Every structure is written in C-alpha cells, then in structure tokens.
Length: 563
Image (cartoon, rainbow, N blue to C red; front, side):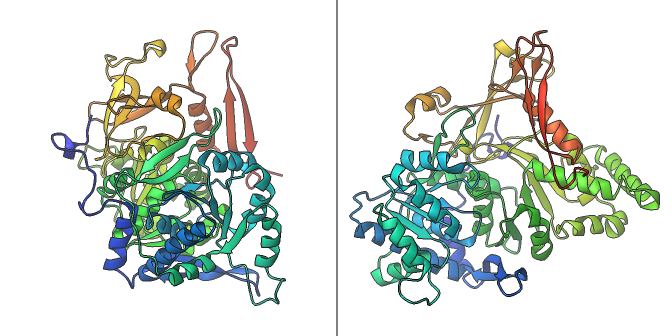
C-alpha cells in the first residue's frame, strides 16, 4: 500500500536534491529568512519570581551563527583532550529549549550526531545510554551536571560536560559555579564548560563547517526500554530528510506559522515536529518546562497548530466537556446543541461533511479555543498512541479545525500514516505517507490474516527511505525486525478499510489470551479509561492466561480527584 501520490513513482525523499541533511534543511531557512523570528522563550524574572508575559526571540540569523560557533567549538574541545574519533556522538540532556536545538544543529554542522538522554528515565537508563553509546561529552542543563558527576565513576567514556546555562556571573575567582563544578569534575577526569565558552572557542578557532551527508548518522535515539535495556535506533540524515519532506507534504506548516515546542525532544516525534517548523521558516516557541503551565504558555504564544499526544488531548476533552456540555442551565444546553449539530454535520457524505459553522464558531467555538490558548490553531495532530474516537470527534466539533490522527515509530522517524484533511472518520490513523510503503502479514496464531473479511488484517510492515538503519551494537534485535529487503516488522496489528485507511487493532507483543480463550489488548482498555474521566492520570491493565478476568491499577490525577 502506498499514498496515492506515489502509487507509480519513487517514494518521497526530498523536495530539493541539494538538501541532504538536517543541516541543509536549517541552512536553507537561515539563508532565506535571516531576520525572521526563529526560537523564542519566556524569561524568568528573578526579582518578581514570575515568568515574563511575552516570548523573547532569536532570529534565524542569530541561531545560525550560534549553531556554527557551537559546532566548531565542540570539535575543538574534543581535540584538546586528544579524542581520536572524527565522527562521534554528543549527548543532549535537558527539557525543550533553544539550546537543545542549537546543540543538535551544531553537531550536524560538523558531521557529528546527537544522542538524547531522557528527563524521565532516571540514572540507570542515563548510565546505560552513555556507556552503550560511548559518549565522550554531554550537553545538558545545569541541574544535570551534578547528576553526571555522581555517575562519573560508572561512565568512564565521559570527559566533557557542556552546560546550557551560564556558569559565571562576575564572581570573584574560585567562587563561580564553573569553579566549583570543575573542582568536583576534575576528580574524575572531566572538564566542565558553559555553552557560551564553547561558542567563543568556536569563533576563535576559525573552523569552517563540515556538514553531514545523506548516509551520516543524525541521531541514535534510544527507546524507553519497557521490555529490557533501551535499544539505540540509528537514524541517518537521509531518514530525517525523507521524513521531513513527507510530513511537510500535507501543507500544515507555513512560514508565517507559530509552533509550540513542548513534546520531548528526546523523542523523535518531538524533534521531527520542530524540524518541520524550522524547515518552513516558522517561529518556534518553547514551553517553560512545566506541563502544568503549558496552557498559560499557549495563551501567550497562540500557536497556529498544535501537535500532541492522546494524554493531553484527553485532558482537553475532560476539561472542555466539564465546562460546556456537562454544565447546567442555558450554557450546557447551548453547548450540547452546538456539539450535536456539528457531530451530525461531520457524518454527511464525503465532500459535504464539515465541522465548522458560520454562527456557532463565532459565539461558541472561539471561546472554547481561547480557553486553552488555541485561538489561532488551524491544525491539530495526535500521535504516539491511539486516540479515543469519542475524544477526536468531540474535539473536532469543539475546535472547528483540522484534527488528524497519525501513526509512526522511532524506527520510522515518526512517520507512517496520517489522516487526510476533510476526512472526518475516527478510529483510524489514515493512509500511508509519502516516504513509506506498507503491507500486512498474516498472524495466524492470533487469528489475523490478510484474507479476513470485510477487511484484511495482520501485522503492519513498513519500508522506505525513512526506515532506521539498525539498532546500535545489537545485530540480534535488528535481524528480528528488519528483513534483508528492507521491510520493518512494527509489531502492530492493523486492518485496512476499502478507502485505504489503516486502523491499529492490537499489538502483537501486548495481546494476551484469558482462560476462556478471549484475546485482550490491555493498552486499548487503558486508553478508554484515560479518555473518559479526568480522575485517572495513568493506568495499568494486567491479565493472566490462567485467569478469566483482568486486574487494573489506576493512578489518580491529584488536580481533579476530590479531596
């Protein structure tokens, strides 16, 4: 199965044959829009102990210069310690912020690659990734420096730490953060720099850029390791450029758009979304690092699109339902009428279906969108997990914008399928994107076959220029999922309808059979609970082949659970 544009032609790799890397994508934007807003943040006011009420911006030209200097500087400081390799990995460990992207872009400007460390995985995973990837350096936010120094005896490859935050503020010699941290780090043979220092070293070096090429590694992105040690997914610049082109083919992001960077850049989904915005010359604003304050950030930034995950859309769904259709009196009655009329309109024939209304969108929808800072959001996309159909239908009615669901994996550079604009169906993840071709393979042990009626069913296989190269230093796991002819076994069980839309119905590894012979997908049950109540923060459903019933553990949301 292929997207309709690529049925009889080569799959999409790039819009411009001269663009061969993430470096080239950004460089093209920086040259075209040097004075345009590029990356913005809200500044912390130490005097008032509050966040600023506006975003402060760097231009594309500013970011390009810092990227160039940082790339040159990081090569220089590795040469100073006699590091022998020509192309190597650089760890990046922080929440989303401009310095994360500057470090990543700086690395690609010198044919280096980044290895992201996760904010949420703890010291054991950090230790494993640094050792497995043999990282000589890590660029990180200030709080992580002490954590790295504590881990130093167990991560012998680490020799350099670069702080994204300033380490000096004019203190007397020996009293700055740089002095204190370097005294501690020196005991383990580690040198600590600030990012500003590295950029200055880069300027003084006069080193020119050495951009990465199509087959060079862009990143080693480690999976979360829920079934064992994290696996390092090796992704090339060719993978990145192909995925970038396929994602931009939908036309959702243009140069005048504004994007909110909040999905973790340690995950490839978040990184792809940011790169799409940067490739189109859009402005990227970074959230302040606190998800509980995200709506406040959104209200100030007013992004023109919002790419997120089901968990946050579930929160929007619960909050908006409570404030509208579940409200008492006239407000509730009006809200129910608006939503029900829109739901009916979305069920009209293809080409006639719509989720907009000339009157209700002015007096009702406008207020709903403003309540969460999405006043100007023309597009929303959900990915990374299945979105509950009722949530998608309700939010389509409430926001009156394009709200699509897609599917992708780290191994496919977050691309795969996405619903088409104007398709108001739910419960599916749409047709193939332009950089992949898909097929189904029968899974007879779970009674799924490509000959099933009315729709073929089976394990989803993917092939194309965005598919990863290998699991780093793990040939055994690579061979389990990647065939010699390029087909990648995703482990997802899908069916495809008569219009070519894929629906994820199970997970090959996560399907269990109860004692009465019934197959159960725990993940699906967890998603249903999460989507239908704001009291549940997370859930875990467990089954055993010897038992006829399931057991579940739910974590409550302290914000919404009654005292």
